Image 1: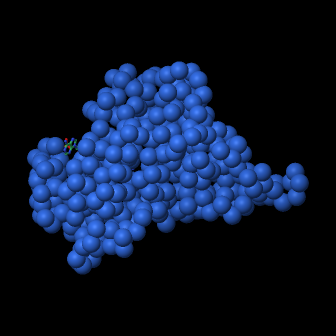
Image 2: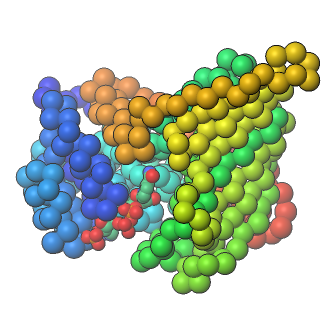
Image 3: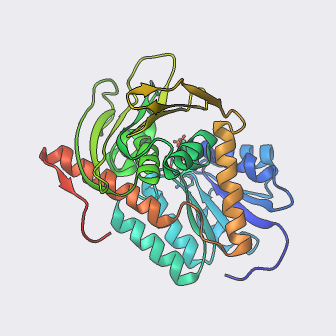
Length: 342
Ligand SMILES: NC(=O)c1ccc[n+]([C@@H]2O[C@H](COP(=O)([O-])OP(=O)(O)OC[C@H]3O[C@@H](n4cnc5c(N)ncnc54)[C@H](OP(=O)(O)O)[C@@H]3O)[C@@H](O)[C@H]2O)c1
């Protein structure tokens, strides 16, 4: 969609994780102008608007959509609102950056993609972890064959999180920890290792009894390449350090990528059966909040330059398709195939 020059008018919807989006936009005055902050509670909207210098504080999403100065909306709201808000935003001609997961179902994701394509607006999903340097380095090392062919991989998200409000409700989350936090690991493994062919899984609610969904899940992935992978995620693990890591095992070596240290370690075979030393790369230049800010800067660039985001809405839809298949596998106790129509 064509636009006149000057900073892009942005509205942020949601004022919790949304405040990080607002901060990021306020730090890019050459490229973006914070026009509105929208929250369910008026005092929250006003507080954030004042903190980040937005012109308008409102509780009305409709007012945001009617505002001629708003060119892009960031949806930082419960998951059940991603699809209806994104579709309404596309219909109003606004570009959309939605938080992950793109939607609670593949059908909703398809409706969002169709609405954005029809109007010609950018639809990007903030899979911000793709912007962390150690993840990008892991992707590059695997793509260049440095560790050979990946045959085994693991993505872990486990720590203790207090779970409140809408995160208790399956109808607002689309499940539990798997589709909320585990979706990052699913997306990263698919990005680095390739398409997923089938999935199996187990889940449970062990610690957060107020949740309707699972607080813990383990899923087993078979990739199209033949590789085997595992995603382990839990909000109930009582540990002072959250484990958010990826392990990628190839025919020639292994990569460990860790969010706690923002580092990547690798060891490769120097001669048959003889492992070389562990090479330690500290990639602290991009912090976790920075990765969200980089994702936002990329979104603005896509609007400015009419580009397709590096993480497409179709990628985000695929992560939800895998999560949904995992929920079906957990429910039936059977392996669910993802082959066929993508
Ligand atoms: N990428 C990441 O690493 C990451 C991390 C955390 C969260 N997230 C994502 O960010 C999104 C929000 O999560 P959160 O942790 O910020 O949730 P949260 O702490 O519960 O906050 C939800 C926000 O949505 C607002 N809201 C709810 N209903 C609304 C409505 N009808 N209209 C306008 N605003 C509404 C709430 O407003 P009030 O405060 O005024 O009630 C609140 O500001 C989710 O998609 C989540 O998965 C991503």
